[in-house]
Image (cartoon, rainbow, N blue to C red; front, side):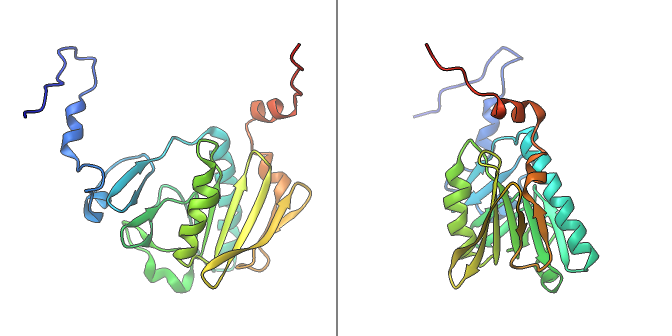
Amino acid sequence: MSQPSIRSRDPLQPTWEIAYLYPAQGAWSEEEYLALDTSRLVEFSDGQVEVLPLPTTTHQFIVGFLYRLLEAFASAGQLGQTVTAPLRVRLWPGKYREPDVVFLRREHANRMTEQFWAGADLVMEVISDDDRRRDVETKRREYARARIPEYWLVDPQAETITILRLTGKRYILHGLFRAGEMAESALLPGFTVDVAAVFKQKLRTERQAQRTPRKPRR
């Protein structure tokens, strides 16, 4: 049966036919994924691509703050390289993620390529409200399988930082840190982050909304 035409005479309508230029979900190869030229965050798993939602302003403020702290610490000690998304990190063949902040030790510089990094030594994710399980559960399993030694989960909603360190094939809790405490890395001795300072990066309107008590319903 021939495909029905979806072409529109209205020049303002999107050109949906462009989708036929790309492979069907489940049929993407790594080469096709890596050749994808886009400014969006796109992750890849078992032949399928996942276009992630655009981050919020608060999310970007927090990511930028954490990046500046880690980059300054790593540069001062010539420890390695720190970058932010978008950057493809290959966890294993057929699986790519784009963590919010990525650190790779200097001695692992040979794992960097122009298209992607092969794994990482430390990753940070700012938990997104659109799908908290993706960061808290799914990526925890995946990063552990990829043998990433340290995983930071930064939660703007709870205003906590959870640091997980790899032991064997799984993560164990290194620390759960709240406002008034310093989150301290297990991988990088001396690297600490003031939890309260992280969440001061939240957009003012969001902080005000969280502090304003809701009126009881009558």
